[in-house]
Every structure is written in structure tokens, then in C-alpha cells.
Length: 426
Image (cartoon, rainbow, N blue to C red):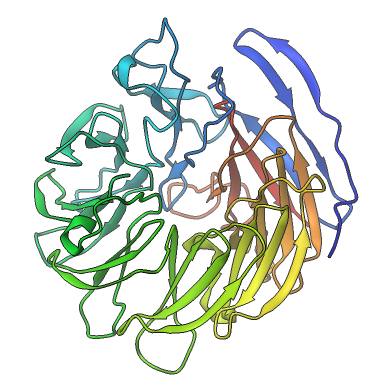
């Protein structure tokens, strides 16, 4: 194991918008994380844990910001806030009924052009039992669709945009905390609904985003949804393809062997399991002594690696073909939970880095090949989710306007509602 060798000092200063906690970066590993901006979106709630959304080109950044329930809340206490890419200033805010305002009021949003008209849409599931689409330019509501036709519910995982053969254009596939799943067209019409209750799972908790992939390599996409206790695979039309009583709080997909079907990586509590995408049979299963987390952005097919965070302060790289541990690095000296790592080439040198956050407020950049620590950034505020990567310098022609090439910045969602944008250099 590699221990973190630098402990940063946090400086607290008073500001008009509230208490701003300044972060400090370390470059002892040969790299450096530099603070670009901190958003002016503070809340008296240190449990904000729904990640930032960003368009593929990095020009639109939207943060879900939530307050704790208390008297005196307004309709923007819980909000989606579009942040300027150059300084993090708030450009617009959406509204939520104050009675529906709490930490899960808004999921991580997806930002994309749904219908091919060149206009971006921001889509998030809310505590108003609704999937809501907003105009990315001004935040105005375009449409909303109910998450559930029964008891009101709310979303948790990010909606997933995919092209299913159910309507022209692309669809939004959304799940709610109670196990309902829906495919919604670009104009807000519900194309189909499904539920874990369809296979007899009436009491489930769903937190991960739906995964849309051709799991069985038959040329048609499937929708894969995991719960704390089971896995549900649906056809593109919303029919049940198969299900397994395998805990699947976290779901990702990869191609890690020689057969055509993809592998479904599922995890919950103290285990990560790889299932055959066609049959659901277990290919390998790796046990941990603590709970683990991972997301699709932490899976790299070209190296057959899946990076996971543990609740005892480690980042662990697993061989996606065998489940064997390749390396392990401690990034939280206090043994705080480490959230799902994200893998990307952060500085355009052709080498991938692993970005991991921990509850103690630390952001760590590790070398993907061996887990050595390259850089850290610390702020004395809890972090409760994974980072979002976006090229904030993308110019009008889709290339970087700052001369650093198409390299992403690291957007960190802190528990106090603020977002910190970091540049990585080495």
C-alpha cells in the first residue's frame, strides 16, 4: 500500500456568499492539481452527493445543489445551476417545491442534444416524481414525465440517453429509487415502463444509472438496471430479458474475454462480480473486507481494468478478465470512504490517470498502470460522490482554446454545494 504523504492546510475565510474553504494542492508525485474556480453555490448541507453534469464538448456545466429540509426554504434552495465554464458563476437556476427539497431533490443531470436540432437539453430526475427536461440556454422547462404512475417517487442515478428503436431520435432511460424504469422520448412521451416488481422484486432500492448496451451481442440493445439485491435486464422495448438475484448497487459493462457477449460488472457491499451479458452466468467474483463503489467511467476496456473505491480509504484496480487485484493505493489516511474512481488521460500525454475522491475532502490523481500518487488537492469539506470530467476550454470548433489540447478539467462536487474546477498538469 502507498500512504498519502502530504497533508494540506485548509484556510477558512469569510465571504459575502457564506464561508469559503480554500483548497490546497500537492505536486509531490510529479503532477499538480490547480484550482481554477469555486462556484458560488453554498448550502448549509454538507451531504450534497449528486455529481455535476456536463455536455460532451464541455461547454455546458450544470450542478444539482440541494439544501437540508428546514423552515424558510425557497423554490431555489434545491436547484439545478448552470455554471459558467470560465469562472463558475451561476448563469441560471431551476426551481423545486420547497416541500420537496432535500439532498436527493435532483439527480446528476445529463446534458445533450436529444432530437438532433442542435440545441442542448438538461435532463434530471427530481423529488417531484418527475423526469424534467430544461433548455440548456436559459433553464426554462421543456417537458416533464412521471417517474412512477403509482406512489410518488424520486430519482437517484443519472438518467441515461440512448438510441432505442421505439421512436425517432434518442430516448432518456430513467430509474427511480423504488425500482421503476421508463424510456422517455425526446418530446417527453413515455415509450414504455417496466419495474423490478415485474419479476417479483417488490422491495428494492435502485441508486445506479441504467446502463444501455448490447449485452448479448445480438445486434439489439438491452437496458440493465441494478438494485441492492438484484439485477434486471430489459429488452429495448421494455420487456424482461432476464434477471438475477445478484446484488448490483453498482453496474458497469466491459468486453473482457473472447466471446461476443459483453461482461456486466456488478457490485454491492463487499463484492464485485462479472456476469456474462448473454446468460447472466457468473464469470468471476472478488470479495472485499469493506463496501466498494465503481462507475462505468472507471472501466477501461483497452487495458481490461476496473477501478473501484473502498470504504476504508483505498483505490483498487482489478483485472476485468479475472477479478484479480492489480494494485491498491491508500488515498485517505483516515480510512474515509473513497467514491467511484474515474479514468481518463488528463493532460494529453497518452497515459491514463485515475481520479478518486474521498469523504475527507481529498481529490487524488493516480497513475493508471501502477497506482502511484501523482497529485492531490484538499479542501476541508466532505466529498460524497465521484468527479465529472469536462474540457472547459473547448472552443467553438470543438478544439481547446487555451492551447493545452483536448484535455479535461476535473469538476469536484463538494458536500457544501460548491463545485471546484481543477486543472491537472504534469
